[in-house]
Image (cartoon, rainbow over all chains, first blue to last red; front, side, top):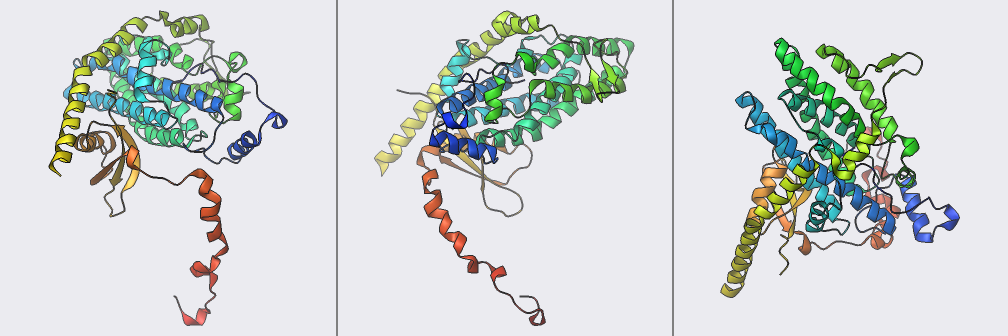
Amino acid sequence: MYAQMIKTARAGIKTRDEMSDLERDFQDKIDRDIKIEPRDWMPDDYRATLIRQIGQHAHSEVVGQLPEGNWITRAPTLERKAILLAKVQDEAGHGLYLYSAAETLGESRDELTRLLHEGKMKYSSIFNYPTLNWADMGAVGWLVDGAAIVNQVALQRTSYGPYARAMVRICKEESFHARQGYHAMMKMAFGTPEQKAMAQSALDRLWFPSIMMFGPSDAESTHSEQSMAWKIKVKSNDELRQQYIDQTVPQIEYLGLDLPDPSLKWNEETGHYDYGEPDWSEFFDVIKGNGPCNVDRLRNRVKAWEDGAWVRDGLMAHARKKAAAKVAAQ
Amino acid sequence: MKNEWPLWEVFIRGQHGLSHRHVGSLHAPDAETAIRNARDVYTRRNEGVSIWVAEAAHIAASTPGDKGPYYDPSQSKVYRHPTFFDIPDEVGSM
């Protein structure tokens, strides 16, 4: 998802007998669905795992602006340009809500930024794919934000209060993202044969990267167990992926596009769609930094940060000077 | 000198005359910029008509450990709620 392959800071789950009194009280609160708040006691590993997950989620929102920013100057109409600008601005806001949630755990924004820029923290694999034609803007909103919604709706019930509240706010805004994307896809799919071909190409290229967003299959996801016990993670990767596929296939059919995976078939028995396994070696390769756009994305983020340094420093210097003058005048 | 902008907590009053409510936080060099940025981040969809910001470092808060001594005593004072008193129907609404 926007947070993938998050290593839980602890291997294995402690039994009740192995827990200290504080740990037992903490687990009881989680089990009773009482939210954990910033100043409550929490195990160090819970805190560390959350910082990793929320931090990666925040980085994904911010880096996620880049593939779409690519099309702002080339949007086909003024209306589409305004919509795209609004969406990209939302992503910056989502990054802010999440960084703020991470900060309540005692990790500074600048520190998270540093870890991203040094390659010590990741962002979602999906943003390392290029956006090659205008239909990709529709497909990103529809498929990528659609996948994010499935994950984030579940995370509204996550155990850490500030993270859950950020999710509530983000989900409200995210539904605009998915709908504007699908709307753009409809225009393309119902347009000229050339437009329809662009829509098909976008779907074909982004389908597997989108379903890979949920992370590897549960069987191979070694870190899930403790995160589930702490309710940092609420649903498993496979559960979320299946839910996403079930809701998306009929939307593909409505557009009149070919299914991007020949294995996609309704299964009467399970009541779900069967689907083909994505190429997980590609996923691990992208995560490792070898996707089509990894180098570009990080370089652009670092450049934006460095180019903006004089503005940040200048405003801070000005604020300090003003504050000092105010004190002197009193 | 550390140059990270300080953290501000943001409070917004919605359209319908309710109190300002905490909506989130942001970094800004000073109060004026914090308000301007809060407008951009937290009121893009008609969420409010008034913004307060307060530097996070200046907010004092009760501690989780106070929970018992602070709030438990109010649980035994049920007579503070109007439903504690049975008023006969004949009296009419009260």
